[in-house]
Length: 281
Length: 297
Image (cartoon, rainbow over all chains, first blue to last red; front, side, top):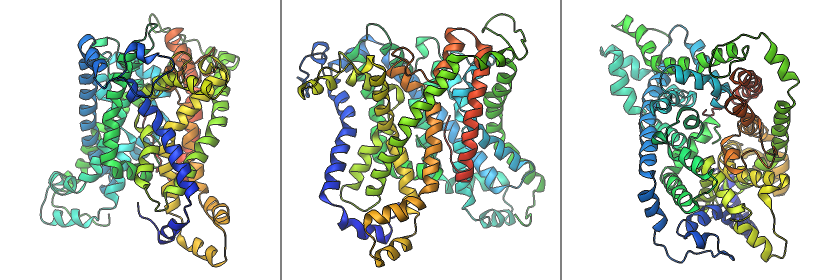
């Protein structure tokens, strides 16, 4: 994001009290993450000790080790990783195809189809969950990871994001390639796909984020705990009467840590993608 | 496209259809067919197993007098009414500060944005842990300060308070970014003119920034309402809809009708009403953002 000159000049006007307020609130925002992180190293007795201590007695990751040894968490991580990776790959490929077609071709029914695709935003999973549940059962995807991967790979957001990008690419690229005798698929694969690398990366980050954090799809589709994703496992195991807090907290930390790190590396893509689409997480 | 330059005209006609085919198939099978199927099922009393009996408009008559359903809708609206002002003012404040080139801008942005990266399930469990009656460190802090122990999670107001705290915490990042891009689109000419006239920064905010930010504000408001109506995962984890039904919002009510009470047909009717509500807001959203505002699932 660029800073306008006037706003830049206002820098001096930010007073100490604003810095203080931002810092205090920033610490408030950070506190839950830090508290959960520190708690993940505490033993059962330490967790419920009164008065509670901020720092754990030791940073030996006993909760992590015990969770992986005693529980099936390796499987849940593998499932989540598989679903996230495959679904994101499919999402990027088909959105790239669709978005490019909507931006650069003038085919019959284009506007109708585009409006149809974008209108599906009005039908979020929350309102379609019951009939989708029935359809998933009918097509034989119930209780399988494919039921998580395939339906969620097509998103109006992906098509929209890619289309916006290719609208900004001049048609001359295509025209001159056609004059040189290039096939349509050659233009797409050899010229357009390489041009769109950055926007595809942006979409991949969003898709991965959504799939990794998703709860409603797994809740509807998955039954057997062999197919649990992380979020489903965390949700189900923390709802039990006898909650294994040490395990839950440690696994929560492992499930959110990758995302917090991803944000540090891909801030620009995430922020720009959100700003551009008006999307709210 | 003005003229067609191609030595492969048929290819040029067929290729775009091939490109949109995969998306088309997935949208048709997993959104359009379920939507139509949902409409059909809303006229039945199907229980999830057994024969499907059409009952005409019985479900629609029933929903009119279904106080449990309407209560959950009004509860959702009430929640939106408390949540939205906070969910707009807090990010707006951060955005107006972070849009200036202040020191440590990147660090502040990261701190306020990080919670948006965390899943509702993890947020729900974490806040339950932190604010819980027996597990919470907040109770301890409150007692240090000389107050009596708060039983936040077992009182109605307390549970709603924690829920709003959690949703503001994780909603700030996205809204802040949208406000920041809105603020950056305001032409600097206005501020320059105001400065020449000697306007204070407070005046500039209320007479220039706020009026020009209106479209962004409206967009944030609409997406906020849609988010509130879709609330499900967070409350499932944080409060399970409780205590009592205090935080049982409309999606959870539909989920319970379908899967706890095994009334899938009637749940489809309930979903359709919710679809109408969400669709109305989405149309508004399109109008403001010219088809640009996109929300996943």
